[in-house]
Amino acid sequence: CLFQRGESVRLRFINGSSMSFFDVRIPGLKLSVVAADGVDVEPVSVDEFRIGTAETYDVIVEPKDDRAYSIFAQSMDRSGYARGTLAPAAGMQAEIPPLDPRPLLTMSDMGMAHGAHGAAAMDHAAMGHAAMDHAAMGHAAASPAAGHGTMDHSAMDHGGMDHAAMGHEATSPATPSASLQHAAAERGPMVDSLAEQVSSRLDDPGVGLRNNGRRVLTYADLHTVGGPIDRREPGREIELHLTGHMERFVWSFNGQKFSEAQPLRFSHGERLRITLVNDTMMTHPIHLHGMWSEVTTPQGQFQVRKHTIVVNPAQRLSYSVTADALGRWAYHCHLLYHMEAGMFREVHVVHGAAHEGGHP
Image 1 (cartoon, rainbow, N blue to C red):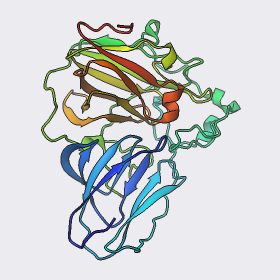
Image 2: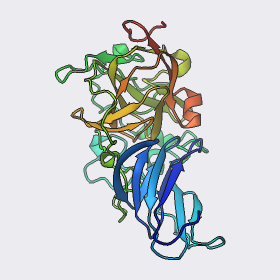
Image 3: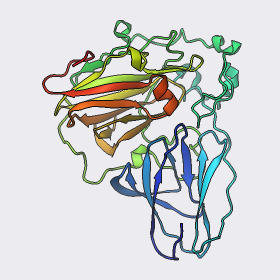
C-alpha cells in the first residue's frame, strides 16, 4: 500500500479466515478506528486491535515519515503472522516485529472463581489438555488426557440454572425488573465445561492483549455514530449459552447441536435482547444473518452496531435486535469448524407472535 508523506490513509481490515483471530498493529503509527463492520463509529485512537473471523475494521493512519511501515497481524495463539507494507515507494520493506509471548488462560478467564484469586496464567497442560491453539480455537491435535478428570467442577453453583429446560432458549420480558430464567446445558456428553462466574467485561481486550504496553481496542471504546437504529426498549430477552466438548469435537448452543435444535422464532418487527454466555474456553465470533446486532452495556445502554459479535471465555454479553427481515436466517459461530460441528441455529422471522422453539 503506497502513501505520500503527510496524507491520511484509510485501511479496511477484513478477517476472511475460516478459523483465526488476529491482533493487528502498525508499529510506529497510531490507528484511528472509524468504522466497525462497515458502520461508522466515533473515532478512537489505538495502537492495536483484535479482529475475529468475519469482523471488519476501518482505520485511518497518517504516516509522517518517508519510510516503510509493517502492517503486522499476529495470530491469537502467536503461532504465526500475516504482514503487509505501507510505504511511500514500491519495493520498500520495514522491520517485522517479533511475535508476542504465547497467551495462556487463567482460571478466571475460564470462569472458575475458585481459582481466580491471584491465580497466575495457567498452563493448559496442567489441566490435562495439550497446549491450546487459540487461533485455530484448540482443534489441532486435541486428545484426551488423564489429567482432565482431576478438575473439580462439583463446586460450581448451578442453583440459578433451570436444568429441566436444558437445550431450550430461556425467554422473558426484557424489563429491568424481569428475572430471566437461565437455560443452560449441564455437563455431559455434549458439554465439558460451564463457566462458574461470568461478567460483561466490555473493556477487556482479551487474553494475550492485557497490559502489553499498547493501547488496545475494546468494545467499550466503540460508539456507533447516530445511535441505535431502533430506540425502543426490547420486549423480551433470549439467553443462549455457548457450549462445547473439546475432546469430542462438539460445539453447540445450550448443549444442543444444530441437528437436534428447534429454530428460534422472532416476531416480525419486534425488538428483543439476545444475551450470550460463553461457557467454553474458546473465543467465539457470533453472526446473526439478516439483522443488525446492537451491543449494549449491562445497564442496557447502546454501545455499537455490528453484524459479528466476539464473545470471550466466561463473558456475558447482550445486544438488541430488531426483527425487521422476514424469512429464515442463519445464526452461528463464524469459526468454520464450530459452525459445522453444531454451533449453529436457524432464526425464523414470522408474522404474528413468536413462540420459543418450535417450527413456524
